[in-house]
Image (cartoon, rainbow, N blue to C red):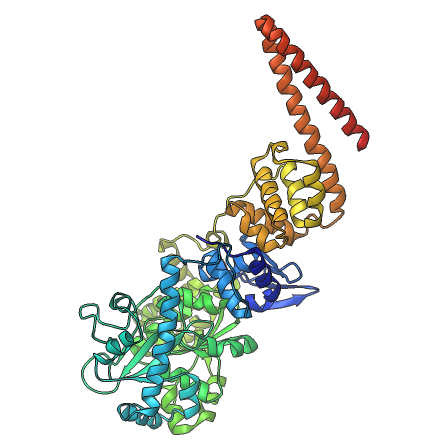
Length: 595
């Protein structure tokens, strides 16, 4: 398979702003010349993720994840090296060149790219049907009746799937898509490949963080069938890891450090139409841990806006626990004046929605209201049931101070002593069979290299590439005893010969994750920033001396073997060995004189 040229890799690296790239995944703040934020690779509250824009490198002091621009995309998007370079090249408008003039992507990469193209095309087609055909008139009237503005229809690229369930398959075949590919697209019935999965529905394109359509949600206009249908998981789309309108909301989420989780598509659009543009929604399922992680590094506070029925209350409670476990503050929006935000917008206007958001209540207040309504808190049995209902919330609070103050609050609300509530909570807590959540358990276990003197010396050259020219003039890979140091020397030599002197190229050539982590850490931590010339020059002396000494010891062992055998041929061989030893002794003496 053809490889991407070094020139392309260097151009991608030079034209990509690493800070802007990383800020698509976590909030960064500038400290001096560098940037810091919470790590997007593991859950943490105190920022330990460090980005150095001058070196185009990142490193997490918490979990050890580190690397360069391309590696960041590989890790975050789960892409191959080649695919990551292509994504960044497309983003920067750089043509991708290959060493053999062409490139055949891996089948899974090709499928994903073609699916993205397909969903973009189909999204545009559905949008056209909504606005420009008689078939879409009823869907357009429905949206207008729900007070969805033309601007929102355009912004969210809303569409209409025709009632004819055979039309889309025929249409896409005329555009060159094969039946085998369309069967994998998620757009058609698994049992009847030519039958469209969506028909006579208002279509809501679901986009990834880059704004590319990757899936659909469809609302039934009339007839039998589920009210909403959603695309199943696909190579380019995982339902539990995606949020509707995330790409539209991210800028405001960053600005306010607050996100609103809504029940569905129409609620999100209502909020955005009202100017509240930090609203997003899970996709046909309850909020997931992965969806919380998606926004975790951008926000301090989550506002929940789910239905007020029993199912909505259960979803809200689950969401509260997930967000609290992620060290986020939580408030709950209490719907008044309508059944959902979309209805409030339609009947009462944008100001009413804005006021609802301002008056969102604390999650603890919400839960006590639910408990008081659900249980007879006048009776002892009802008090005990209400307390048991609240215990899972207390359990996920991150500090003992929060737990103690919450127990005091709940005891006052339920009319019982805090001592009694605390005693019952301890009994509940002791019965829970669980592994205590610790920061270490969230962090990916990484094998670390033994930091030998040889490895430190080559790492110093890796962190200061201008010094490798001196190192390669004095040493060869055979001079190294430590395998990791030897591997890194060979990598540096390959990059030097290819004139590929960026950190991206260096990390791309590293043969193992452990070596890449060691190089990333050495660069980011600045461990070899002070007087690196002396460290490398002294290191060259140290390595050459050790290499010569090892050769000398080997010759001595051979001489001992010759002495034990004592044949004429061995005696001649002994003379050769003695000459070699004398040569090494002279080399060692000359080495000492030069240092």
